[in-house]
Length: 257
Image (cartoon, rainbow, N blue to C red; front, side, top):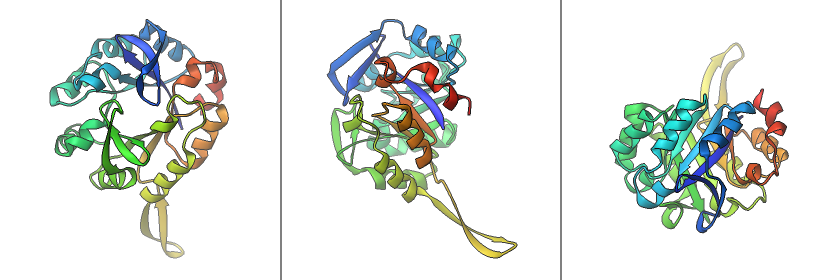
């Protein structure tokens, strides 16, 4: 399982919110590059970079910081927040993103999001499926939709999505543990069953249908072990790192796997 620290950006600074509420912002560093380099120095290989300014204004804002981090570290960065146009996505990739996450755009303009999937491929485009009370939320989590989470993911799985970042917004920044039951349910429902003919005859083989990245609520190392056991492909860690609940040095056994 990939260990993926998060850096959320507002006004070019590294911040954290609670349950996506912008009024709860807490600044942890004025230098996101320095934070990213500290992750790299600890052996981390991945980074979840979120442009919260972009999420609110519906266009990419902090791509220069993405450019700095991608250019001055070896971290593989997935970038999201405010990606609404073809130009935004082009800018993100040109700035060094290894992957981009589409959240609001996937809910409001599915045709455009699918066009990105077709153009860049399923290894480059991540579906952001963030939910409040079981329904997809958009625009920096400030707006609820009538789209139910699981059918939403299943629909995009049929269209070729491979990577899904799922956040239970009620858990975000609360340091109360992740939504394990939710992730288990998603993984069970998206499992693909293939019929194969082997030495013992015809048999059904189950394999994961998506690469699910859990986000929100990770507080302890045990949370990470539980997510790995559940079958998650990755786990995003935010506030727990910044508040010292999980130390970077404690992650080394998981990073080295």
